[in-house]
Length: 525
Image (cartoon, rainbow, N blue to C red; front, side, top):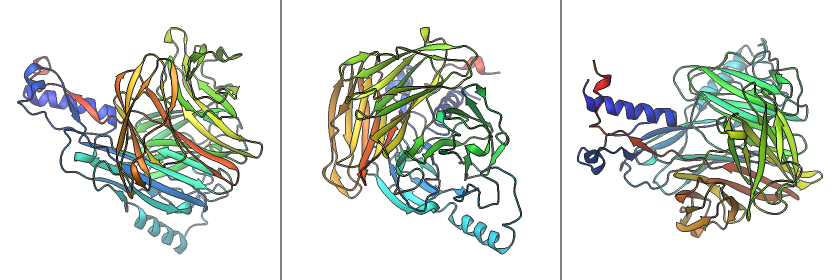
């Protein structure tokens, strides 16, 4: 095997580790990067996204949105398609599934045998793999709508000109019932491990962990639950099979008999890979999606707590045996401050800890910055945020986020009710924000902003000129940082402040590819 082949394999392997699965083409042999021996930064040429099943409510109204920014140097051709995934265990209102399992992964009974089961299976097969959304051109988002509990989970791939920065989102409004409110989640790449602090097995909550398998072979998954006293005893949390190109919603309360208000969920994939997202539905305070927390770290940032939050509850967990006293600071519009009475929070090793921080932001934009002493003890964390008062409250979740290293995008924005929140906890930063064309018309607009070190700013994001429909907001880090961002969508229905918050992780649309002339002879035999 020659040196060029070896170096390209190394680049593709590194890229696959970043994006789940991806590919790039070799740089032009005459390029400046190759002549000087430097790594070339190239657009990703193939990637994938997974969207969980939106809702079990017949009242749900879901909008799927797909978008790819215009990327310099990207291939001139390509496709980006989201298709319906097969549903393994569509849960009924009583918590049982269509295939006769008790809850989501309980014991099967025989009541679904016969013609009725065959007809249901055939209907599922017809829906599975059906194209739901396909991009036509970079820079312009497209949408599709689905109503009720039949809206499917999606499995998608993008290549060529659409792959770099490809983003998808689903936004669901549920008018009434458990989890009523606005629920939003960005579709994510497949992986092999996920952490979800902020889940619950309490009687007032109905929490599902949604697993989606993009591949042609089955995946096997273990789900571990950790409460205030350590790991919870689970009955069927090990060896859950997710069939090829299908989705499996798992009701957490069927995995354990223990009822706890605050639980950390750890998803570990034994074989294959999956996408995972947690849906938290409450009888009184609505519900939303809880995306996975950033990897365990001694320093975490939870960006974009709404300025009118009436209650903030922090849930933290450290996977190891060591205890940790987390230093808590709030990045406000004027700088980093220490919340009175919550200067440090004690988290015991292997145990989930929860802290009520009250109306932490006090009418100003804010982001939480958590730090372990010397960064020595890794932690995962998320906050549950409430808006509204009394019986007219709505909830959303913000996990510890990854920084916007180069570029990130939020979808389904509207001229009213969209808030873009940006924080630079460690140093001054400059960002560029682009509003795309609208789904039904409008001209892109771009603005540049400066974010002072230690602050959080709710910026007045640009809106496409002549906007019709919804649009995408793309944030690019131009200088300084690191930068963290989130986007809030809000509306008022029947006096209830519906809202949903999505952190903006880097889209990982660019990758450094090793120079094809690099000497890798040490690897040759």
